[in-house]
Image: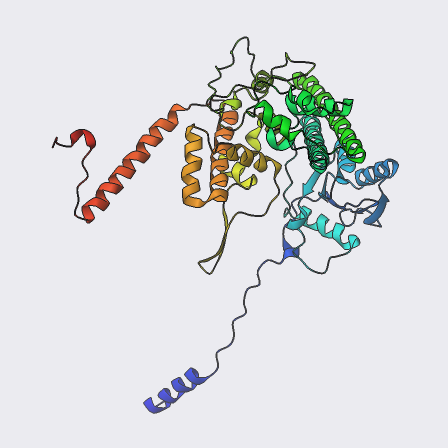
Length: 480
């Protein structure tokens, strides 16, 4: 073959269309390995429960049960006959709680999941398909169970949440009292800071008892009230109306009723706390001294009218956690609610980073193609994270190092970002103390503040040098 023919053949091969390579198909969702072969799925409802068992365990793998106790017992019996060991269900309101309790009694592990994690696939909008989709996702290990503390801790959590609802209801009746007083042009609630204090309730009770003399009502003023006697008397010059007195009386009675219910709730909580096994014995390891650094020199309020004034909440919290978490700035009032929300076994979170991520106190981002499309805090309702935010927001005027950190971050990130950053730091301190069983050490902040001031001084010297100046300390400045 001549060189010309060889060249023509090479050109023909080069110009010929190349065969297309078949792309290797990735693993489909249906091809994933089954990690939970004995998993079932339940679509929770107020009146019906749609249950899907593993395929091949029953002729009718999908069944519908009512929400009565007998029907839930039959549901658990059917799952046991199918060999189910774990069940995935959505956290729909409070309708999942009775079924979850029955499954735990039968030895079946419930997996409470967030509905947002399994509704990203279209075409499964009916309850009949929803339970099957739940069963499949749980069987291949694509669902993560929500955190739920132990049963005895959940009982305390229920009481504390109910107590907060009682406080909110009592607050509404305080507003009703303000409205009734305003309609009668009684401005006492604008003169004193709190109408539910000693002076405010004494004046309201005297008005409801029939006292109408403003001078006599003003004599009920407590010595700690900043307003003088004449100002209080002028605020009690009134325009009496029977209908407004009626609404004022009902609001006052309802407020008193809710206060009594709150005291009863406190007594129930105080009765349950000593039943927990203490992590530390105050007799062997005494409670650390109260530094009062997180209260800015303010004295702790006494329980006025409480039937059990000898109950020391700080000591009980110390026995529960094993460390005095009330010494952390901002956590004095939130220590017991945190115990009811997260418990005291923090080993379920491998690190402090996992803990603050679960609390939604760290930023998230959305990166695609190497570009950051979005960065911010996720929209998640987390009661525990809200408690840490409340602790951080109470430190705006605190002289503690954590309060100083909050004010620095406020100038840098704004109010919302500063509260999140400070809550993040308080959560890390709480996690470290409880998991490692170490007490709060405020001296660590002094070393970090010294390093921060040193970096600030270095930065200022560098900027002054760039402008042609030289910074000299005051003690080294020559006399004129």
